[in-house]
Image 1: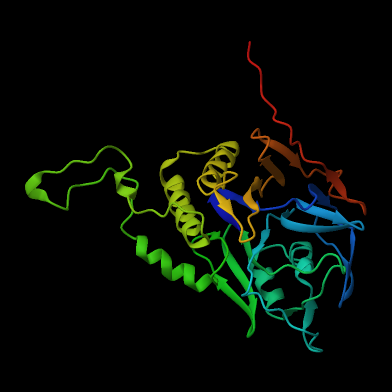
Image 2: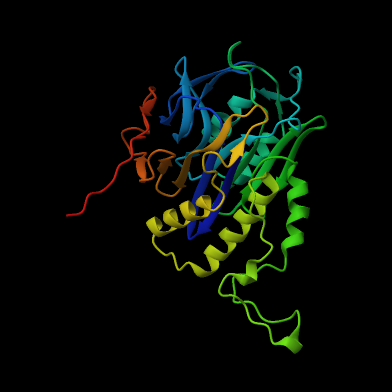
Length: 328
């Protein structure tokens, strides 16, 4: 369970909640331009653009959950169980990638959304495990730049690429369902409600917020999708955010509206599903901001000229101890 969104105000700010019942050894990782990936079916892949994002590093290989490249293209993979159906073998006439190779391939070779879409149209996703103890995850992806976003899903009938005017993605069902389901909420608004139910009684609202009565409040993926779209669209219209750091703050507020407190969601086998971290990437600056469940203070890691070049990963452990500014 996760939520990701593209917030565009002058430039792109890409946010993500990681909702999960376990930790996966995640750290902020910068992959430099000259890093060499070893793809299972396609062999060596020379990284063309530096990346920054959250990843598990195993055998010196960054397994990214979400990332941004130095050109401002962002991408995240989200859980898509039962619906993700990968190819069983390589097609001789098409590029073949394992699910965990998609983010490095797209962000390492594409400068914008148009290039990413062209590259993926000739690509199959093959169900190859990273290693026997790390099976491939069922995923779908959101890709965004300053000009828009798309959703990429791979099912029994192959690759599907959808235009994403909402700039939001959650989990199941497949993306076309969400684009239809959101129509049920067209009446919602941020403005103070007007009486329209029983004019003869001259009804008045209890107070502000009445325009959004009916907004889904649970943590299912369709409800989080609608709530994230509602909060994002109204933030863009009314927040007044102008500076980059203001937009970063707005993204975290939107993510907070769909975050999972511990104990509010349990998995089928009784495990606690919660928002282990939230992040916002300032794509224009190559800056990755994050907070964790145990530390709500924002932390920042940024790409610079030094760490964008080279052949060695730059790994930054998470600051997870609650960090409180003391004011005297």
